[in-house]
Length: 94
Image 1 (cartoon, rainbow, N blue to C red):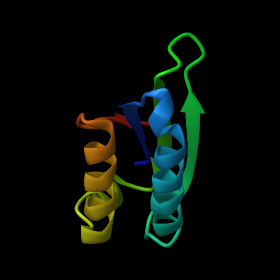
Image 2: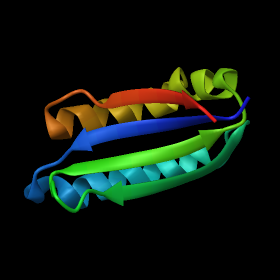
Image 3: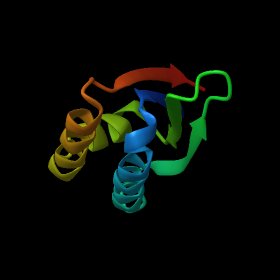
């Protein structure tokens, strides 16, 4: 069962460049993960402080393995520290 992960973050204008760099770092790590199919990063037009990453995974197990990956968690911690809030995750079955 393919799953889509919706990852929502709020970012202030002064942190956009730093967040972009961290998201690129995450994306490069993700590319080598088993079960990763595709991902995209979107910026909301009517709420400029919101960005959404949508990633597609072969299975929930593959996503959970990535979610619990120590390298991913380190970068995610940097993101949460930068933004001052926790990242929101939602998992959907395709």
